[in-house]
Length: 110
Image (tube, rainbow, N blue to C red; front, side, top):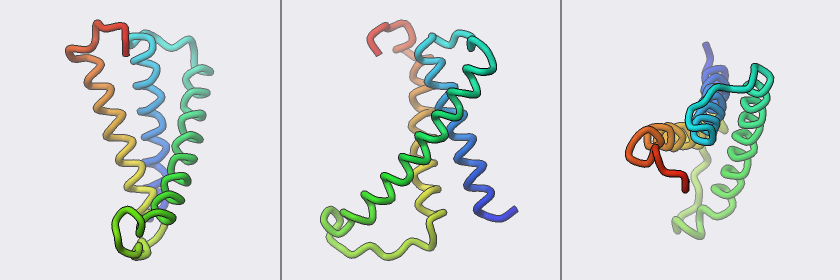
């Protein structure tokens, strides 16, 4: 399997994790209303993740020298940037999911 397929699978899986964790946090890990709700939420989060990757790529390319002080060395390809953004989203989502089971699970103000 080539790298582009792996990145695409990672992106789809990350969108699934985001959809599940968001639903879990909102409903206190209650059931889905149906398959349509689940698949619709997954699709929306997949599109949002693709938009986030594009916005992050623009910001990184545009303002790298201003914040880091050096010119941006070209990434090997777009897959590298997509990988970093997707993994960041996945780790943050998993952290939110795990924290929702911990000491913050009974609070209503999150």
